[in-house]
Every structure is written in structure tokens, then in C-alpha cells.
Image (cartoon, rainbow, N blue to C red; front, side):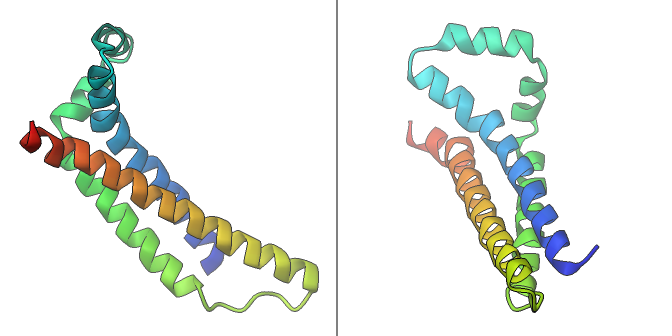
Length: 125
């Protein structure tokens, strides 16, 4: 697997793990804030694993932070790798880099949102 493919894979994996932070912490807080507590209890009844994620939020956030750090490092390393000489392949290479960076930035935003609801919002209320 080449460096660019590993970077794209790491960005996708970081998106998945950071989405876990949203599911464990931000989604329940949003539902309660909107007055949809019944919807939250139905969701927990349908997917009881959400309770485990909420109970182990420190582990979920640590895994997400590790993946985001790894993906960020791989993004940094892949930023200056050469693209193929063929114009069509070079354009695809640059598009893939931009897409991978957008996925990484979205992952960081999701992680920050989940972190706010998990650790900062409870202190404010």
C-alpha cells in the first residue's frame, strides 16, 4: 500500500472513530436539548451499545484522538509526495489529496463537537 492510499485510509478510519464520539455524547445531548427524550430512550432500547459508549467515553475519545493524530501525521507526510506524470492521473492524485484533507478536517470538527458535549457542556449546566 503506497503512502497516499495509507493516508486516505487513515483519514477514513479517523472519520469513523470520531463519529463514535458524536454518537456517544453529542447525539444524546442534542436529543434531550430538543425535548426528544422519548426518542433517545427508544434509540437506547434499539441500540443498547450506546450506553456502553457513553459509559466509556474516555476510551472512545482516546481511540479517536489516537486515530486523528495518526491521520494528521500521514496527511502531513503525504502532502508533498509526487503525483504521476500523466496529466489525468496527476489530477486524480491532487483530487484525492484534497478529498482526504476534507475528510480529515471533518473528522476533527466531529471530534471537537463530541468533546464539547462530553466534557465541557456538563460543566456549564
